[in-house]
Image 1 (cartoon, rainbow, N blue to C red):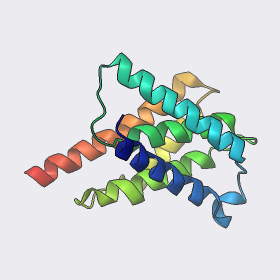
Image 2: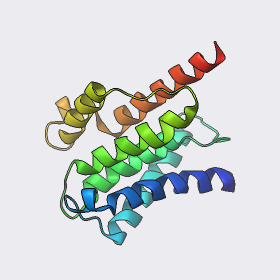
Image 3: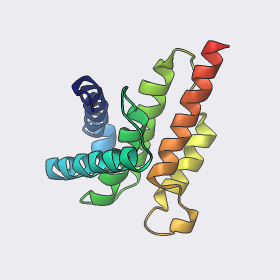
Image 4: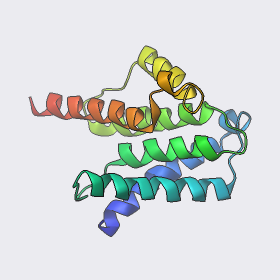
Length: 152
C-alpha cells in the first residue's frame, strides 16, 4: 500500500482518537493508548486480509474501510465496552468525511440511530448486529451515491 495512502488513513484514525478525548466523549468511555494501538493493528491486519481476499489493490484511500474497522476494534477492546465509541466513529465518518465528498450528503439521524442500535448488539446478539463490515458498507454506499450524484 503506498505511503501516502497509509498516511491519509492514519490521519482519519487520529480524528477519531481526538474526538474520543473531548470531554463529551471522555466522560462516557476511556480508551487507553494500548487499546488504540491494538485496535489500529487489528484494523490494519483486517484491511490487508480484506484486500488480499477480494483481490483489491489499494491505489487510493478508503477511509471508510479502515475507520469503520478501527472503531469496531476500539469497541471490542476498550477497557469499558461502551457503544459511544460507535457514535464517535459514525460522527467522524458522517460529518468529517462523507460531508466533505462535495455533494453535501450525510446519513440522516434516523439511519445513524438505527445503525447505532445494531452496532451496540455486536458481540451480544450478533444475529441483530450490523458489525464492522455493515458499518463500512453503509458509508461506502453513501459515498458511491454521492459520487454518482456529482457525476450526473
